Image (cartoon, rainbow, N blue to C red; front, side, top):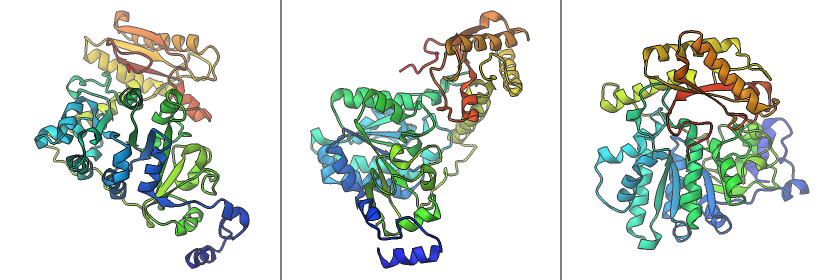
Length: 436
């Protein structure tokens, strides 16, 4: 144990697992490797390595760039799938990375036209990461140049004018998974999957997250590397990380870190222990990581005004697809809190006389006969609207059973979110499951 670790243990004034030098602790030590080298080695065994991207964090950007510039990485990997770009502009990023001149206005559509409305992708770091790939491609042989796949669904915001319109946000992980499955593995290629950590934690509470889809469709092919933020871990864990050299990574399997509860390392949306959630962890800094928020955007500019429009729509969308219309357990009975969102839906139907809605209802997987129960729930919502003057012909009902749970339902609060109704504009692709 290092002098610094002993000092930390003494200062803590409590017993910290790992502050002793027992043999069991030694056997469970982490084998630290430079993060770039660790990821390169992982690609020798796995065709897909999922690396958590920390939105607005410069250390995360630096790790990405170090990979792009690493000769061993360049020799193994040609494909990268990112979260911060709309697939609608795949041709734009292809031309840009090939060295073509692309105007700033056109290039910015890649990150400005995603389903995300926070504006975080307007940070310079995202354009800089694409520029790093472009620079690397200039020196790579034609068959070895990187191709970046844009993983956000190809939304056309000009068609999203009502809270009842599908904004594709619900289908982000499904589209990302389809891209990996068809564009990468379907072609026998390897890829770095660069996306927020909540999408790649195997014990994340959201059942249709990217990693769940990849593990089901491509079992055993994805190695998950998540970045730790020393500012998010517990003080006990922080003391144990003092010997961890920043910029390194380690497998968590069979280690003291792997046996920790995920909450101890700051994984807010997962449950269970660390080694059930991820395969490896990386530490990028010995101090708490810092994050830049969305940049200030002039609200009177065209882009600023459009962002405000999208944010307003997102707020209004809650009544339609925000799991606000919920039901009592095992029954097709609306909860009292469903009244307000239903009133908002009714108001939109009255405002837009041409609006025709698909009423989808869902059940939790623990409920009996979920298909029949969900169909009854859809009918209850339709009847509520018809009783208040909406023409029945404008409403189509669909029972979705337990097909698309929002959570795994490990407690009553989570299960209640699964017992819901959603309403969207009737289109050729509208349904219980993703169109991809």
